[in-house]
Length: 316
Image 1 (tube, rainbow, N blue to C red):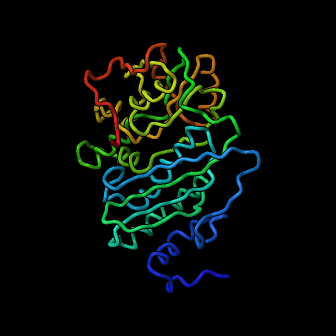
Image 2 (image 1 turned 135 degrees about the vertical axis):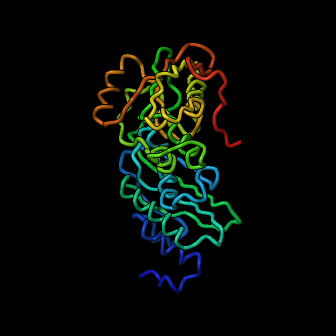
Image 3 (image 1 turned 90 degrees about the vertical axis):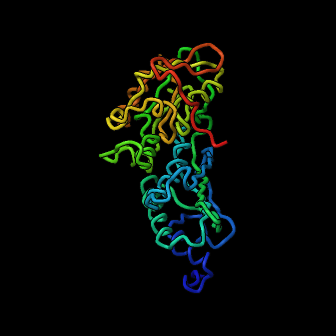
């Protein structure tokens, strides 16, 4: 049976039909039922993660709505990247004021559509609700992996190097730039804040002994790896890779503790460093060693950094 005419639907369902039905994948049942159906790839283990982004906390009211849709997907895809998983589908929950213009939803859906095409995922379903504000968005991402090959936060060993992908600090500095607190003439920092790059497609099983993505700040997330592995880590601030824009900003405390990078943080044994660098060349992704794990109680020590540092981002 064909779906009913959009104009004949109640307002909420008309909005869903206009903006989100075109994003559906197989199993979403045209968003016409209460749940979706799908079969996982044969012989694969499913990986699930959920992340929310909230207006004024993770994005600004004036941010273009397409970048908000892309950021929502990408912060969730980053969790799959940290475990070495391949993305499949996602579920979306959207809460917005009734006064939100239809053009905002159109732009938001356009951003989702662009990144669905870029990363090979499709919408399975979700929920919409009205709220007095702010806009609140959540996605549950579904991926798959070879059973037993998921990278975990636990597993680092004494002597492992602490490695990062890409450059660090751009996301947090981008928020400062958008608030007018620092200069960003090239808009590099603002773009990194609005549209992070999930490091999908890296082949790190058998190379990294532990991994996670950097969402709450380099030092805080390094602390998570330490606690999971029962180790300390020593980080050389001079080795932390910076973009030209971050270097010009000159805010080392933000680089070390600010969130929103969505780069990967890895523990890698010295014997596997050559394999890591070969993977870096294959994937055209920069990897930088910035520290070493030590046999000591869980803690993070910074060499050559600012004398006083905040602890990093926390939601509570």
